[in-house]
Length: 359
Image 1: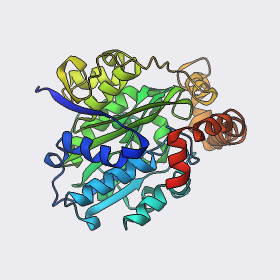
Image 2: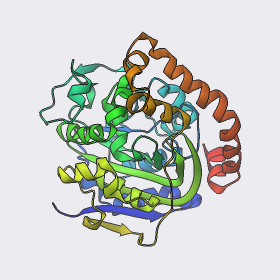
Image 3: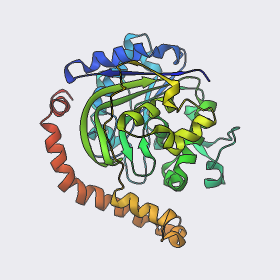
């Protein structure tokens, strides 16, 4: 395979919107997103509440929209979207994460994927696990078919997949809210998603925000760390690989990156990726992945000593206990205590000031 390219730039709050423009153009994004097609802008919502580094940042969304419109993409063909999970609400999340005022400013609607038509779609690719997980058929949003897609992830760790980025952002769009069934085989499922996207989207591009990154027990209960970088690439595997390398991980030791690279679904080996813009050779954030109490419990049920009870706990009407427990832990215990302290500290930073005063 040819070398992939990933653009990396340093940024600051005062220049962030122009820096996104420069980043996208440096990565030659228009070559990968045909203007005659409609383009999905797949946001990343990991929590209905706002927590720094957890979900797509408002300046990330604005920088991308501003550049697209300036470069001749038609407003009526841009479609910002996000899905729900059993513990997130996309419309409330759009408001809490300040996407709504950005979309209003640029005259764009927000499309909540639970509100659109979903259909069963037969993929031609030899999927590793999803056909087994959903034997009655894989449902996808009907209007995804034939559209470009832009992914807007952030740089952060994840208790299930080690790191999370552009590849996993497809997880939140192509699978319904019961996608938690896929956590048991998360790495194989992420490889499946790359195959699925190749069948669905004529154009794909990824723009990753690392202004505030997430270290630790991601994708929610993290320590926000200001790193002032942004990344872009047409290859979602390559951008995830470089983000993992920057965070301090060996990308090829992360199963989904290695497996997808071996299947030639993208470039995962950083030695085969050309980084343009910043020299990242000395970058090492020394991030460490941890598991939150909720992810630890989920893994005990799916893979650990509670596995004999998996069906009754997670695949029966009794499953309602799981999202309830998650919401109690995240929203009522962790967020008002540990989370609130970290948000207060964030608000004292330049990025915190931007979040409070500009959006």
